[in-house]
Structure formats: C-alpha cells, structure tokens
Length: 423
Image (cartoon, rainbow, N blue to C red; front, side, top):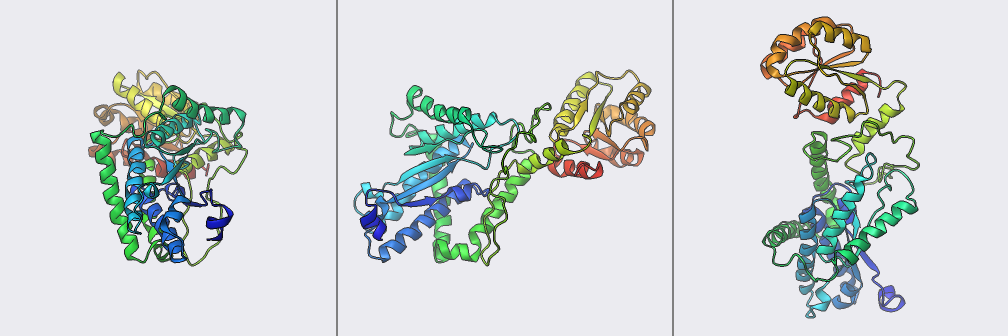
C-alpha cells in the first residue's frame, strides 16, 4: 500500500504474470482464466486494505506469453480486456479508463527449439504480430538462440528489428483494433472468453486463486493439458519444425550449447504445494538427439528400397525423416533389382538398423525372404508401414519394429536408443 500510494505513484508496480501458466504447457483458456483469477486476488486483497479499486487497477499490468497459434493468441488478448473490464466493474468502478488494463507480451518459451533455431525467428514474428494486432501495449521478442546459449549482438538485433519492421513498415501500431469486425476473430474471442469465464468462476467458487493453488487445482489442470500436448508432439500430430518433423540431418548442436538449455527444469525445493514445471515442448526430442551426438558410435540406418518406385521412395523419405529425429546416419539407396543384391548390400553396410521400404502389396512377397537373409546377422530389422493383415507373420520372420504415421515417434526412438546402447 505504501509503495502504491507514496513511493512509486506513477509506476505500475503489480505485474500479474500469466507466462508461468503458458510455459508450463497450459491451454489458452487456462492461461487467461488463471491470470484473471490471480489479478482478482490482488485486487480483492488491496481493496480490503483500504485502497480504491481505481487506484489498484491503474498500477496493474498483465504479462502474457504469445505462442504460435496465430488467431487464437489475438483472440486471447482481446478476451482478456473484455473479461477484466467485467471483473473491475464488480468493484463499483464507474470510469471506463479504470476498467482498461495494460498488457505486456513476451515470446512463448514453450514452443522454441534448439535444433533448426532459425525457425524460432518465424515463430517470434507471428507471435509479435498476434500481440500487435490484438492491441498489446508493450511487446518483448525473444532472441532466436536463447534456448542454448547467451544471446549475442546478432540475435538481439534480429529480435529488435522484428518489432521495428512490424511497426514502421507494416504499420501495425496505426489502428486501435485491426481485428474488430472480423467474424472469425470475434467468434474466437467470444468463445475463449466464455470458457475462460466459466473456469474463472470455478476458481472463485473454491475460494479464489490462492486457495485453488493450495489445493493443487491449477497444477493438476495444467498438468493434464500439458500431458496431452506432449503426447501430440510425441505422435507428431503437432509439428515442431526441425525437431519432431523434417530434421536437418547434417545439424549438430551439442557443441553449441553453452548454457543450461533445459529452461525451467532445474530441481526445485519440495513442499506441501505442487509446483508448476516450466519446460519446452521440444525438450524430449532434443534430449534424444543429443544422446546420439554424444554417443561413442552413432547408429546407422540402411534403407532397403525395393519394388514400386513411388512407394519405395515415399517410405524411404518417411524412414529418413523418422530416424533423423534421433540424429542417426541414413544410407539411402536408389532401389535394388533383387532381394539377394539388397541383402548383400545391407550386410556390407554394417548398419545397425535395416529398414525395408516398399509397398504393402509387395511386402507379402518380399518381407519374409529379406528377413531370412538378415535375421541374426543385424541388430534390428524395421519395416516402414503397417500391413495389418501380416504383422504377426512378419514378426515371426524377424521384423523387430514397424514405423508408420500413427507410431509414437518419441517412445519408439527411445526404445531404439536403449536397444542399441545409445541411451
């Protein structure tokens, strides 16, 4: 109270930090609802101590993280303003100016990656656009390389220039609400606001933000969403470019990491209240690939391409992408004229993993003969695809693993790491 009224009367001394929810893997609705609940807790506590609601709200600032879900992030900040105005009015505030809120945004950390780090520039650009279009009062853009080292002059310059370009060349600061009147964004705004308001009321019914935290409600709800998001990344339903899809096979990052890259996962003191773990969605795949980079011998994958040209190329591309996520060396082939030729080349390669790439129809004829030539001579035989009517037959013949679009890539690659002695 002393600070607000006398020591720093011109400053916004209360920051309501929604970033902590976002970077723990929360949904947009959760981030908004929990931030509003936290802000309401401040407002209730300070008005009880004798401050006017107008005085408190003028000293408050909301800090949100903006992610890559472009339109949803625009709608989130618009919904935040609308809902906060409704909350403040319940304290008897009449002035429209006092119902407004200063919103600061920072680039999401949750969706950033170590591998293919220049993609982080694209992510922070769309995030900054979302923040500007939704009317954020201040915007902080993270340097693209913060995930693995202390950012340098170049990365800071790029981060500054992203904001300058959006302001000075795209003129995003010239219109008060560029999204106003857009049926799509207005509908998203109203939908997010409704779901966030319902969750906000649920927290208030528990006794408010602090009570919900002590009960572990916030932590539990965010944990459920974070687990679902992790599974979507592991199954590659959600793409983190360069990390769980389309890796740069020539990239090596272990020698470039100059700081603790595991944002937010340091050991924290245990207590009676569960904690929110701050992390990045890409970390599990990054750990996998860093294991490979640090291994004494990097596993090699030999692509046994045979039969139909289109199918063998498609499945070879899929397999290269799949094993590239773990940083394995890939030996591709143009296609073999006979099974015997392919078996000989596979054995000569000394590869740990032999991956058969062909069509489902041809697997019926070639899978068993290929396995007969390779079984007990190589560490692993993998088949690209899932010919469901012949799975058991092929397993008996010697196929160790089937990789396809529904494969849990993270779990499967971790198993390869353990079986090959990399982990």
